[in-house]
Structures are given as structure tokens and as C-alpha cells.
Length: 106
Image 1 (cartoon, rainbow, N blue to C red):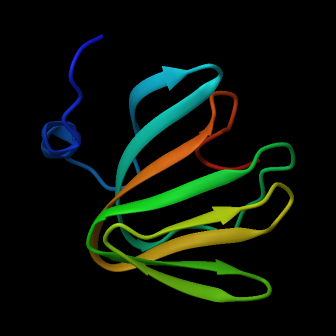
Image 2 (image 1 turned 45 degrees about the vertical axis):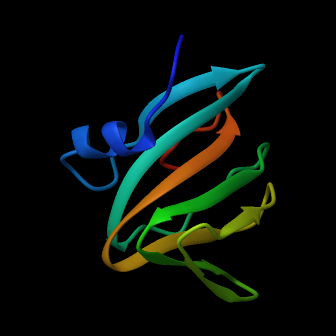
Image 3 (image 1 turned 30 degrees about the vertical axis):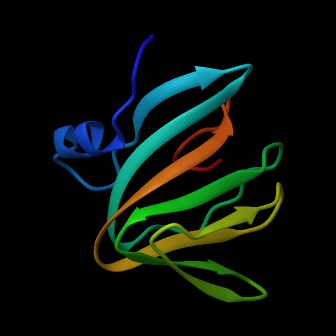
């Protein structure tokens, strides 16, 4: 695999909430997605999940807090934490998580 352009991958994504698998590195998946609106509350019992905002602004809600992230900001959701992501306007994120992580929660 050669050079990776997140911008090019992002342009190919037409629908929100459809993660695109960019690369796999030692059991870790890099998944690019566009989000808009609110996703359902869910939990990953066995995996941590890292959200990195590439374009726009999103909010990660947990039962303890809500954190707004802007471009180039990230947030780790620890395994077992009930959460959801949401964006008022279309945003692009990079998810970094184990390959086994179900992208729609468990």
C-alpha cells in the first residue's frame, strides 16, 4: 500500500454513517466516516475507540459527559462506556479501533 489521502477517501464517501476502511495495522482499523445527526447509544464491551475529527465538528456523548470536538481534535471512548456521536452539520471523522469492533455497536 502506498500513499493515503484522507481527502480523496472522504470525497468517495456519499452517505453518512457508512465507515470506509482506509487501512489495517497490527489488528487496528483506520475507518473514515461522515456523520450528521445523532447516532444511537451503544457500547463496545471489549474495545476502546478513538475519534479524530478531520473536517467539521462533532459531539461525543457518554453518560458522564458531552465533549465537542473540532478539526484535529480527538477523544477516546473506553471499552464498556455507553456513548453516541452526533454532528449538527456534516462532519468527517477517522475512527481508530480494533478490527473486530462492530462499527454499529453491540
